[in-house]
Structures are given as C-alpha cells and as structure tokens.
Image 1 (cartoon, chains in turn brown, red):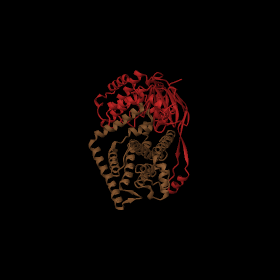
Image 2 (cartoon, one colour):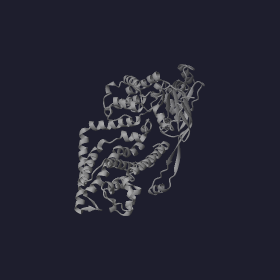
Image 3 (cartoon, chains in turn brown, blue):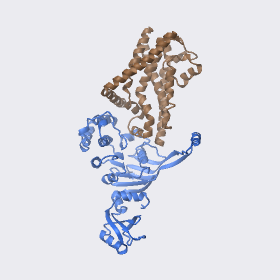
Image 4 (cartoon, helix red, strand yellow):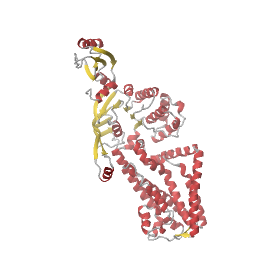
Length: 266
Length: 328
C-alpha cells in the first residue's frame, strides 16, 4: 500500500508535466487522433467494399482494431519509455541510480517514466468501441462489462509482457533492435481476423506470440461468434489468464537481466 | 566489528577480444575469446563510523567498481563486504534505505520538478518522518544556500546548483553512510568550496561516514582525514592523510638544477624522489632538518644552476607513486 502510493506520486509528476506543457500535449494528441482515425477509416472503407473479411464485417474489424489499440495504449503508458530507454540507461550506467533507490526497479522505471501522451489513443479507441458495439446492437450486462474490462487489462499485460521480453536482451547485447520489432509486427497481424492467415501463422499468434488473445478470441464471445478455426472454444475466456502468466514470465526474465547487470556492470 | 568491512574483495570482468577485419568479426559471432580483467584485486579495509575516507586512484584503477560493490550495484567475484552489518548486494532494498549516493556525472533530480517538490518525493520514498524532514530541509537549504532556487524547475538550474540539490537529497534521510563519486567534477572554485564546507559540517553534525572518490586532491585535503590509494585494482596506501603527507610527501621539497650528472644524497635525511634531466626533486622534513641546512649540505658538494623551495605537494607525491618513481 505504501509502495502503491509512492508509485502514484511518480505518475502524478508526469501528469503535472503534461499540464505544464499544455499546448504540446494538446497538439500531439490531436495529431495522433487524426493519424489513427485515418487508419480506422481505411479499414472501414476496405471492408465495406468487400462486405466482409474472413466472415467479419466492417464494425467487427474496427472492434479488433480498437481492442488492439486500447490495450496497447494502456501498456505503453507504463512501458514505452521504460523499454525504449533501457539500452541507453545500461550503456551510460544511468540504471545505477535506479538500482540504488529503495524501490522495485521495474515499478520505479514504469511509474517515473509514465507517458501521459496516450490519452488520445484511449479516448479514440473507447469511443470507437462504444460506437461499434452500439451499431452491432451488442447489449452489455454487468458481468459482460466486467469481463470486457478484464479482457482489456489482460490484453495490456500481453502487450506489455512482449514489449518487456523483447527489451531485456539489452542487458546482454548492446543492440537488440531487431528483436524489438516483434511486438510491432504482431500488432499489425491482429488488425484482421487471424483466420485469414495460414494455419502456421494462426498457431504462432496463439501459442508463441499470443496476440490473438488480445482481440480475436475475446471478441468471439462479445460478438457471439463461433469462428475458432482449429482452436478450443474456451480460448475466448482465457485472455486475463494468458496476460497474467505471460507478464509473470516477462518479469522473471527481467530479473535475470538485472542479475546479469549486477555481475557484469555496463 | 567496524561499520564497513571489506575482506579480500575482488571483481573480475570478462572482456571480449576484438580483432580487426570482416573475417574475424564473423568468427567472433560463433566463437568469442575473452580476457579476464581484474578491476579490483584482493582489497581489504575497514571503516569506522564517522570516518571521512578519500578513495583515490587514476582512471580505471577500480575506484568506481569498489564503490559499486559497496553500494550494492555490483556483486563481487570473490571476497566479502558488509556495511552496517548487512551485505549490500544481497539486501539491496534495506541497504538502499540506509545509504546516500551521488554520482557526479549524473543527476538524480527530476527534470521538470523544482527542488522543493523533489524533497517531498524523497520524503515519501525514504519514509522520512515529518519532524526530521522539516529539520533537514531547513538545515541543508540554509547550509547550501538553496533558497533562491528552491522553486525553480531543475532543468533551469546551473550545474553547481544541481549538484547541491543532488547532495541534499542524498542526505535527506540521514543515511549513516554516503558515497560521493566525483561530486565536484566540472564545478567552479566557489561551488567546490561550498560543497566541501557542507560535507564537513554535516559530518560534524550527524557523524555520517563518507567515502569520496575524486581526481581533485583539494577535495581530499579539504574533506578527508583518511586516504586509501589504489592502482590497478590493488591497494597501495591506507592511512591518515596527515601521516601520508609527512611520510611520503616528505614535508618539504627542494627542486634544484644540478650541474653534475650523477647525484648522491649526502645525508639520509634528504631523499631524492624524482629526476628529470638536470632537475632533481629532493624531499626532507622540516622537523628533521632546517631548509637552510639542507641547502648548505647540497651546495657543499654540488654546483647548482637554479633552485627553489616548495611546500609538500600531495598531488605530486601521488603522481610519483603512480609513475613508480616513489615506492610506498
């Protein structure tokens, strides 16, 4: 509890900074909204031309996109700066001042490097999510809403875990940019229903880089679909569990990296 | 048991051998050869509470590596470290709660936050109680003259102001041990002297233990009462600063240009410590032999074309030790 309040203090600093640089925050947010909105519109136009894609209509595909974007934004608020700066902090030895603080190093990095700039992503994806669900006539009960929140959080954990796992090699190699492309590639794959890809790709996106759990599987449930390809129908409920397990593994890997740093220095 | 105990401490680093050429680069992807570098090689010392220790050595001597092991950043290859009864690299959180660190090359302050708010943040991070917090902030603000810039965002502060801020937050939670790694690097004379006075004052007030690394010997002379000298990972000297000055810096120095090629000291109280062409550096102690007498003894035997008398110079002595011209 004490630590939660301390970490909240760090986040508050970022919020204060955001207010201090009002103009920049606003300009950047608007630019991002336009950028992502353009993406949405391209998807919508494309799908409305084809009517459906892999059996999914335009609104359903936009929902895939919204789930993906929202969970990405939530995870990146904490992990974008942490992961982007880590290699540099190792090289310059700046990580030393993180290790000498009486806090958990990862929690410290995630909260002191909190990025407020994702507010635009969040507003946009939430609005689009509501819009699409209404257009599709999906009715939300209390339990369904709770599940929706858990699914989004689970998705954020999956994206965060992958981001972290692909960053930790920086403890051993000075440069590991190639590995860091993996989450980006996976993200663009799940903009469409994975059933349009070859079975091997579906397998990869489910068991190796399990991004299919971010949007494809949970949306089966929310949209009342039955499009499981060769996977078990229970997968539609697994997102939160997959997120927790994956993030736990990522954290263990992070500890390994940190241990290596302690024995080798920079 | 002393406050800090360091026993047979060693740290080895693996360094990849790099050879030139594309072929060798490919070869190194498959098979790499390592050389082992001993950054710290079997160092032992102990420090009592309240001691002000200057930890000195040339670049790459192993100073930072030692400090990193003491502060729990690095795990030793072999040997033992305890600080206040705990092993720093094993009980990191507990150890961090009880120490203050300043790395002169890096700022720990938050770019967009004024010093005042940074204090508040550290108060929470180190669970400092209200009374102690208020007292320390007042004390440090006064002593480091920080009032004029307490409400300015850190990004607008000068290097000297930032360093003062860094030192203040490192000491805010009253840690019994403080590591200062080159705290005066890049600062002007006034800023340096302010920091030196401050450290002395805090040591007197709170009896903190201090380990200081620096390349500025004036820092050591102004602050420390003990000197540990290392080179190539090994300890060369460990003892009082005053004692060092008297024994090795020899008290006084006679620098003279001799006409003769071969010079032998006519008296055991005179020590030839350095030769460079016709110029010789001769050290002696004022309490053993008067400067005039020393000069007379030499001129009785040799012809001098020029000479001057100098006060003991610690920097020069240490330089001579590193250059193996003087043996400890």
